[in-house]
Image (cartoon, rainbow over all chains, first blue to last red; front, side, top):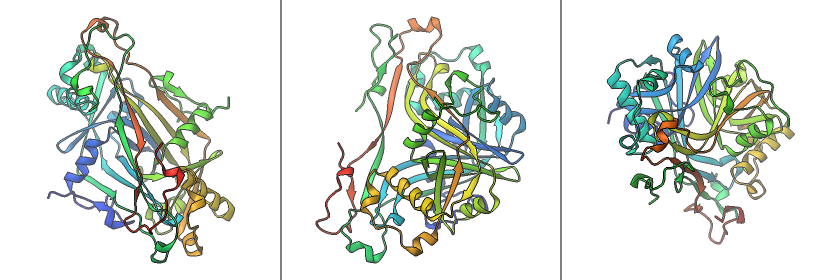
Length: 215
Length: 215
């Protein structure tokens, strides 16, 4: 199983047993999450950008407008960045207030932005990005025209320094609390894709694609 | 309607019409989100911590172990922080790849950590935190004992510099694309609290609390 090297920045020190360094786990979390938060600093002042993203092999991509202040800063300054994603899987309800927790899968990674200029890489990144939102979508849509390509900036981030943190399972209470008459367990949290709502301006007779039908 | 002042750091410059500065909106987003990401920097290198939080009036609270490396750093260095939350409400599927988007409500805020030492404030913050996970939970659980209080660090952040960004509604396509035979609309994303799973070690006869029953 291929693993990320453990570095000073990615080592999980608090509740170390929740730390996961294998690439398959880190990548499965990145691939499931639709948004990440990207942080960078200027004169030690941190900024965060919540944004969509996709992963292809060992590279993470974000895209935005060439007019975006943040995209331009990332392109021009190429600052060190920290990117994180968090998937919440459940509320962990212990007998004691102290042992309440959440079940989650999170990734924190460190990298630097690179401007993508190669047309093939750019096109492929946007295809994967669109299909991540909705598998199969790219084939159906009107592809970007020349003006739209020029208006779109894609930045890539090498995935070399990353780790995941994962909690699963029931609460852990203190031994003496297990006899208390307090309900304990997990309330699952699920992100559900609901029934698609047609654009009020949708052309008559255009059917709902198969990939949008709620199973 | 009370508003946050617009500062250099909180002004929404990209798609400015999505910027929201009224406190009621910012606070409703903070109160709905179960996790935030907190970013700070050391020597211009950014770090992020995904963590639970709660808000009381104009203050945001996080808590953690007194043994946590990050909590200690935040307490000791009191660095400027950026905190963000993002709620994803739907996938916006346009006719053109370019106009694909998401419906979301996000908050980005700037502040500094303060160690909470007042016992009343500490207790109230943990009560609100627990009830945010699950309204009504605090009354039912075993309250923290002295050792647990000593093991818990609570940090507060004044909410003075914050803004929200919100997108709602159907896709916006280019005028000439509305005649294309491409389905367009919104696929809602909903976070659902599932049926509670009892701890395998739950004491016999302890009933599921009303507040955990899925309506």
